[in-house]
Image (cartoon, rainbow, N blue to C red; front, side, top):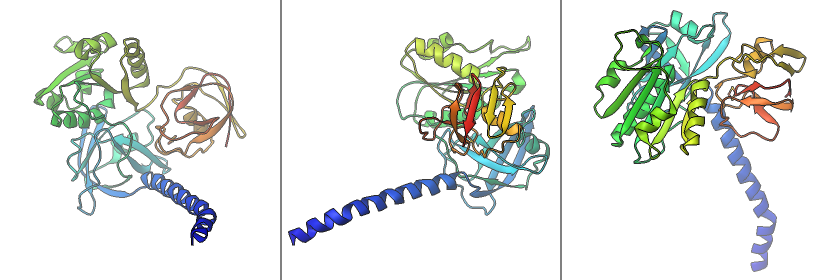
Length: 348
Ligand code: FES
């Protein structure tokens, strides 16, 4: 009997292990695909346009409750650009994520934005939009520490959800919000009146009658607010995030952040992929530069989480603009997350 059990274990245990690991891999693969496919049909219930921003309130087209999201997560909208080509973009949920009967998005109409411009110009109440499930890894760690949230421009959207969550957890919360002008401050009235929130708007181009902060948010200013013991979270453009992250690191403080886009590079480097040779200058990522030259590299999140734009880097040095949230083997890069430092040679 013992010999039979031993024989069974020797013969079949490795096979069972292998099948289990295959099952896990398949599950992960389909789960990733599922997260990046249109999974929800949403109906636009309210549209608001403020300055260059479009605010959409979306409900489930079938009237049911929507899948719960965590504060800081985003959904992906799927649509078509002005030329009728399919395109998708990720937008953070700008709301108290306790509510599951609507999603609220704020979309900045980017110059040349393929989906944002199209939505800004055409979307109406009653329209149906295809969206992914809520996803993303930018979330508050559970803690009792005071919290300093830093937002730049449209980076305020995930911070709104975090403000609600942190206030519910009775944390001491400061929101410091950089925008160009008072017209660019989203949810300004709401933040000004939110009980328990220490709200500090900072304008880089204030009018003479502006009474709030002006200039640029600095690490010294942040440390004066939260000291070394607070938790710091930031959602802003690459330049602002990098500066604050480096300056806070010098004081031994970690900045948790999410970049929603990198700025366009001025660096002119040759990019080579298949039979395409193009210049990196003027593009936010290697992906954008190659695709504008006709490479047709698939992309979805454009923020380092779906892995669709993964390529092999055969030669050259890159600047990592966004942190990849998907596993990479040695020599692999996510082209949406990098800019070129030197001439690059990429392959599939
Ligand atoms: S497009 Fe999703 S990781 Fe690059």
